[in-house]
Length: 122
Image 1 (spheres, helix red, strand yellow):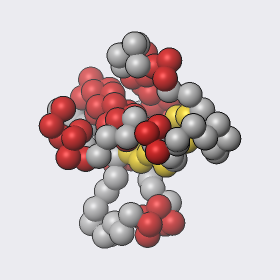
Image 2: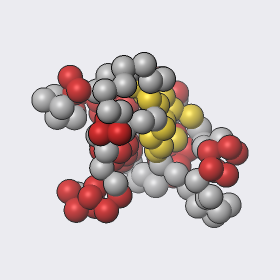
Image 3: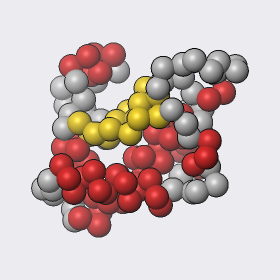
Image 4: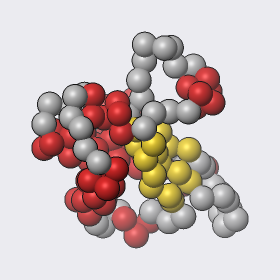
């Protein structure tokens, strides 16, 4: 397991955002990018996660295709979970790649893609 400070982890998130396809980023609006150590008990319950399952990231919001012109939706939220991401990483470079990949995956949900389509694209 990799250990990094919260400040380092936030910088890795910032770097991951900058590495994503910049032609898509102008469409990413009203989204908060956060990190927490672990999913909350409410998130685990909502997602029906067992005690032995972990979660690397979570998109919460209304995907763009479902908004149907709504302008007044609450901010969407993408949360990355620091401890599970550190646990699956073998090095700092691997952690940075895990963060970038998880960020891309959660943004794909924001754009309305389901897990099946995301898997096809990966």
